[in-house]
Amino acid sequence: MTAATLLPAALTGRLLQDAAWGVSHRVEKRAVDPAALLTSDTVRRMLDSSLLKWPYFTLLKHGEVPTVSSYTTKRDVIGHKVAGFADLRAVERHMAGGASLKLNQVGDWHRPTRDIARQLEDSLPVAVNSYVFWTPEESRGMLPHRDAAHVLVVQLEGRKEWHLYAEPDQVGASAGLDVDAARPTHVFTLEPGDVLYLPHGWPHDAVARGGDSFHLTFTLTEPTPEDLVDALLRRFLDDEHNLVHHFQTRPLAARAGEVRSALAEQARTLDADRWARTALETMREAIG
Image (cartoon, rainbow, N blue to C red; front, side):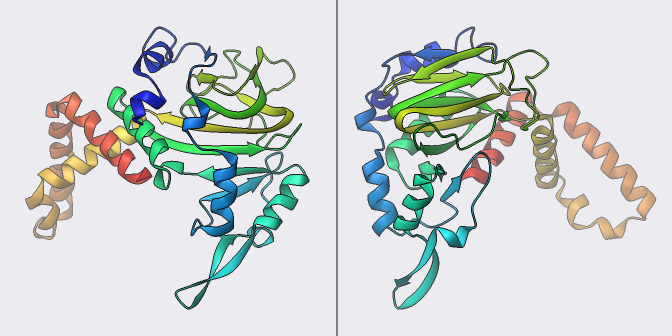
């Protein structure tokens, strides 16, 4: 099954490439087949028997992270005792007490998720990361917060009630917990197969209702001004070989003047598309 089958292009077009992008949230009901993606049973088996290690998984309870040693153990790996593997029974005890299991960079170890991430990157100028949240009934893993990215959520199992806090003075460019959660602007529940889009920086939280909730999240991060400056520097270092590798032949004042002139020329002449591509390549390499 291809990524386009798992997350059809018509769906991503409606969610990510129309007037809603960056402006308002969207919910598509029963838009995907959750059985074609990751299941909680698969995750349980992986935690019990695979080589998946911390920090590919962690636990969260109302924003607090338990001590890693309280839910990990050592295993024999080719005759060596290696720490950081999941202690499934300990993970289940934490979850019974209300902790959510968070799986990080899911695309690194789950091919269908990775295929969807690549599909999204082929369609949009973003770097995509992927997470799974498995939350016990009436619990939340994270406090109300903003992500410094657009967010795409696919509900796989159970029901989760979402609260958005999208007043203009609460939406922001950076991630943060400084959210006034007294008056949500939107409240709705996702069920298996539903897909949610949240614009960059929209504050939110979510609570599992009527049983455990299991959902897949993609963060879609556009290059920030800092990313673009880093990309300019990367091009500068690639293109100004003589200055970079023989700077010691210039007096400091002359060196500073040459660097300033070269950077100004690089910024003036660097093609905007090439500049953006460099930033995206660097961001995507960092994710892996």
